[in-house]
Amino acid sequence: MTEKIHPTDLVGAYEIAERLGVAFPQMVHEWRRRHPGFPKPIVQLQMGMIWDWKDIEVWARRTKRLK
Image 1 (cartoon, one colour):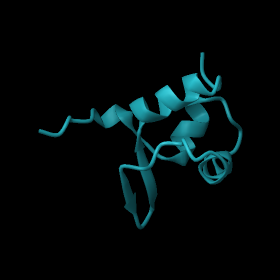
Image 2: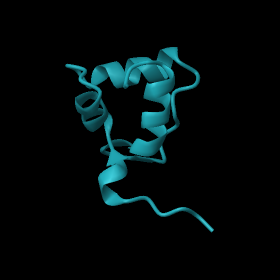
Image 3: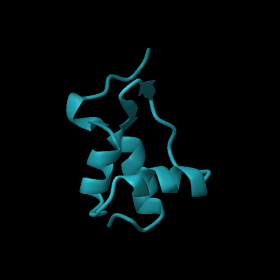
Image 4: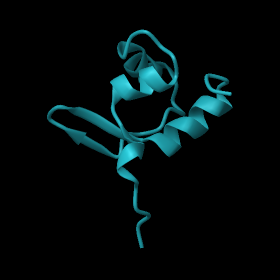
C-alpha cells in the first residue's frame, strides 16, 4: 500500500527554496545536480518537478540546510 501524501507536502523548486530560505529556486536544481543524495521528485510534469516535502526536509536536516 502506498503512503498518501498530504497536498501541503507537494512542493516544487519555488516552494522548496522558500521553505529553506533560499533566494532563487534555481538553487534547488543546482543541489540536484551536485548532491547525489538529493531526493528524487515523485513526479515530473510538463510544468516542472514535484517533490514530497517530507523527503526534502529529511535531506535538508541531514545537510544542515534546515534546523
